[in-house]
Length: 299
Image (cartoon, rainbow, N blue to C red; front, top):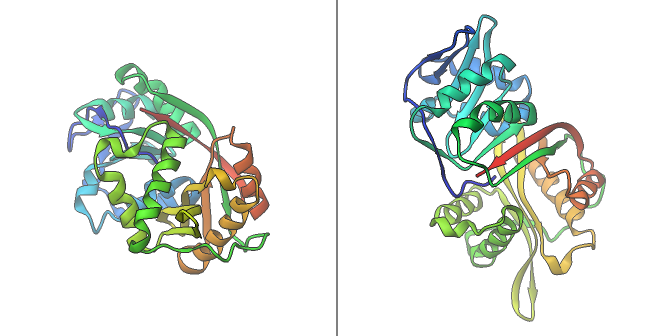
């Protein structure tokens, strides 16, 4: 998911925000990580983006400042990650206003609000008056998953990338990002390159790289950008423009699903723009089914 450029948000570190509605919003420094993980496991595909950070709370104490817990008389009634992106999850409808107020205090930086559509759009309705105008709002992004073997043969030439692939892989990733979001991720420094390198180092970047007369070329590529709660979320799916319309997306994704389910997590998920009908068709061909709807506010 995009993390550039930055948009500033105001947040008070360590402060608790209690509205007249009886909603309490506080960071996770005094929370029980086990309770938060259990809350995420109630809807693991919806929660994967957030869940990766929640599962890391015991290892990385600084994450506790960036996870906001929403509590009502019913108990834990929502979570929200407030790092490079804002990621709300299962927030009670009457808690959007106090959560927006908590996020707006201080100076956190974020580039998008992303997650289940009801959470994102509900939060944005309250946060919008306090924030800059977004570049784009993607209201409907089908959230899809597969928990069985792919229904089509996998492309055998898709493999796990290595550091030696970076000179050809990185330009393909930049092309994908620019095509998807509308600007080059390299314009904000080296963060994007470091992100791709970290996924390569972690064995979470897969590609079909073919030798051509002009040198090596990425035909298909995808990253397993998030792993949490038994879910491997695929991001950055891309087919070279000269090779589209030939079934490479479905065959490539079948290879990604096989690898992910064998080596990383039993459930593979992704979310896709509703207007990308060719991608939706390819994912359904592989065996993905829609289980929800995401939304994204891009800055």
